[in-house]
Length: 416
Image 1 (cartoon, rainbow, N blue to C red):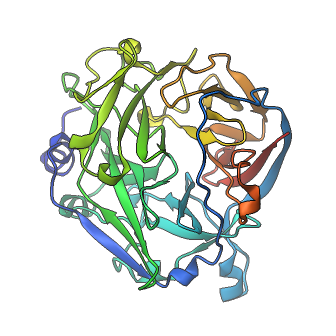
Image 2: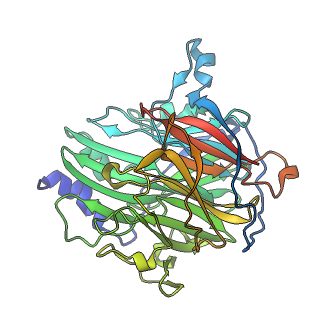
């Protein structure tokens, strides 16, 4: 199907402009006391020799559906069920919170990007930031829209969707970044890309700021444009920081990659918002290159990992997994599911962010109650330095039920 003029202006133009544009905007939230739960943020010591690699699971606990537990106190009614997702965990300094999204546009009605405080003892109890009700008048949002997006969303059958696919990572004691997926759809025409969002907590002024620095960082799918030089969505599969360096993982979603190859980019945490400072791993030479590879062919030789079948769900080309460092295991951990078996969560490990990965696809959890293709896994952070060295022993998992009814649940997995 060919694009309409509106599509050309509102989607394709934005997605092919990879030169750095001006900041889209910032949404400022007062009252950081809203983040009532503090935790201890560790300073891990990284090791190159993995240990505890049998990954025996001691327990897999269901905390229940993620709900706005504050709503019952406000109106005396039932808890508000957050029918949205995925839910991504974020931490800045000593504060922990959930981030999630909903669609905006005539296909989905009024939407939102939720900023929610997390209850440290019961993570499924969330609390939406009260100031979201006062933002953008008609729509609650914590991420600014471009002028083109705002104009286009008044058109019939237009849909804009920002989705967090991985957890955020701290870039300093008061800042963090997160990669979000951008999806623009009008009727059957579709364009997908990714963007970085920057978060800042100002403890002196008591504010939380969400900034969209630029329109887009990558474009990896546009309908009716098979000849485009698409980019990989670095950071959408997973993002982590190690010794001041941000590592951003992407699944090859092109027709060449078949959702099996994982590619890797990196940047100093201090300059990650400047894409000119990014480097790209070439597995064939075991070295970093400053030239960004394009998805013009399958680049399996440069992939840090190739799965035996497609990783994660494949709605509009998406994939989800989680990669992080576990102090408890002295190893880099990769959890994911495959499209062949969404009830199974698989775990791999490696001594470095670039591998080599164990390639033995150990089954971590098998549960017919959930769909791990929509899961985001992160180490559970503790509230005391007494747990130093244990980060990674317990994992926080946000996941949809097997029926996928637009709800998300919080689970806690503990290793022996």
